[in-house]
Image (cartoon, rainbow, N blue to C red):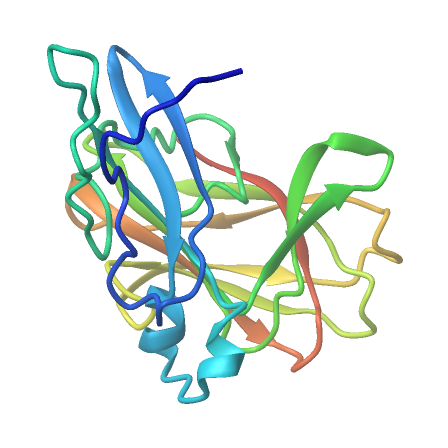
Amino acid sequence: MGPFSQPGLILPNPPINDGFNNHHSIFPFKGEYYIAYHNREVAYVKGEADKRSREYMRSVCLDHLIHNEDGTIRTVSITRDGLPQLKYINPYKRNEAETMAKGWGINTEARKGDPGNRIVSSANEGDYIKVQGVDFTKEGLSKLKALISCGAPEGGNIEIRLESENGLLIGTLNVVPTGDWDSWKTITTDVAIPNTGIFDLYFVFKGNKEDFVHIDYWEFTH
């Protein structure tokens, strides 16, 4: 509506962004303001050398947005990997599979017939999901269950690991064909966590080199 003034810069071009554009969103959460934007962190970690290919390989980053007393906004101190985790993940309840700190090779999509619900798809050999800061401080965990579908002619395995995609193996979910991608089945496996604590949780996909499993959610149980 105007007239407007231009008091300064809120968000400079972030590091490892190749000088490309920078979409962003500003939102409040529990009394603090945050700004979400993207960089090319994962593309660089993956070793993508071609700049034009990196243009569409965008990684979400999150930083504080701080207001001055006069209402103006300070220039954001941009980072490569965002803020410290505010709350740990509770593994003892249903967790949506698309809730992740990092996804390697996978995709997400709306579940057919349930458009408000997203699932993880396109899981191939060597792909993985990283769930950061999972609170395994309660003792007595013995099983993990997940709701999956497998429309591929052959299934595979989902390795459950701690701390890295090659970290401690605590269990393996055996994926068998469910008939088609719209047929869902709960699968369960035994797990063994040697020590309680806060860990990064990895779901590592082992099977076909084509999409072999979709996941809706997972949950640890006693």
